[in-house]
Image 1 (cartoon, rainbow over the protein chains, first blue to last red):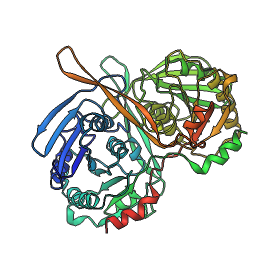
Image 2 (image 1 turned 90 degrees about the horizontal axis):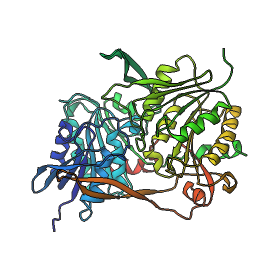
Image 3 (image 1 turned 180 degrees about the horizontal axis):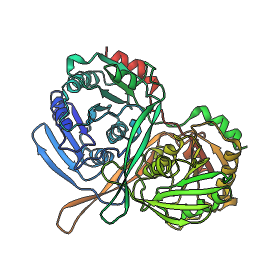
Length: 257
Length: 257
């Protein structure tokens, strides 16, 4: 029986991304790693699951303490394949999703495949950490994220916080020495405002590219994740999945009388 | 200037589904309808957006007070195309997503394309109603859902509740006279437990079908949506999108000291 902790890793950028390789390396310092990550990029896939096509799984790395699989489905599919198929007899002690190339702060938690997978993994009992760097580039510098992740993984494995626990960790761009520290935050209020680029395809049909900007509804609130990131701090938001709007329940009862 | 209220409709089963046709008919009793629905089924697509391919839009129905478009993207893409492209100068008074063929109660709110679209639409200011019937069949009986939706649409248009408002409405199977009434509920705790069917494709490779059951963590709680549905009531959960787990913030600050 292998006594090292088991760390499950997934992401939404795909198994070949730099951020994924970076966190696998950090995790191996703390235990065994089993990872299932998407074959291809699944950014913006949120909590999507694959209902109308079958899933394929193939092993892409096989070492004593590091096994990596690529899955044809979404990030949440990867988690379900891990917990309800591959790891039925070897349950993880910790889940990590990332490191994402790009921020998943504020309302982006809802669109993010990284965070969809992190939440889903937390449902199975072990704590989940979603890790994102506010840099979309393929060759982003993950050193500061790795340094913080190393510390966080150690603390979570040592303390074993009560389940379910899911953390949305976003790291600002910068070398480790430029990061001011970390802040436990709440999710910033605000929405994405889209702009569609319209072009014509070679057959004369209009097509549209979705593009947008986040409209921060509370830019000056220092307890929010957006504020932390803009001021050089790592932002940590504990995430839960009861979406009930308790404050509106009485009003809705009256509306429907 | 047309003074009738404008009702925006979308869904996740696609523009050709029976539940979509049913709610479009109900909505026309209350105002003009502009709908953008997916070309094909998008069940389980959650809050996903299309980032790496362009979107197409085509008109499939064009009457004075009913215009329906099919969009190549996800349910949330449909909403964004409506609000940030098609309806820039004619803003909806109400959003409806559905009627979904199948339940979106409890944690399914997180996986549901119907509810992803309903939430997204609520961000733009008008109230949103996600409607689902607990019957997956293509030829489901939507009469009871339509009867309740007709009443709900009238009340919401008359009262104009404060924004953002998003309702997750699930209707049990049954003829209108069999429904016991409605209950404003909270989201039931519990998760889906999956089982993978493994088969071999013609080239000898394993493939997997995701299938599962909802594991209700509080089957006897009468204030939950699952309880309401199992007992013959329409379940209405007001939904909000701040996913911060406020109760864990102090604990996380201590963990990271």
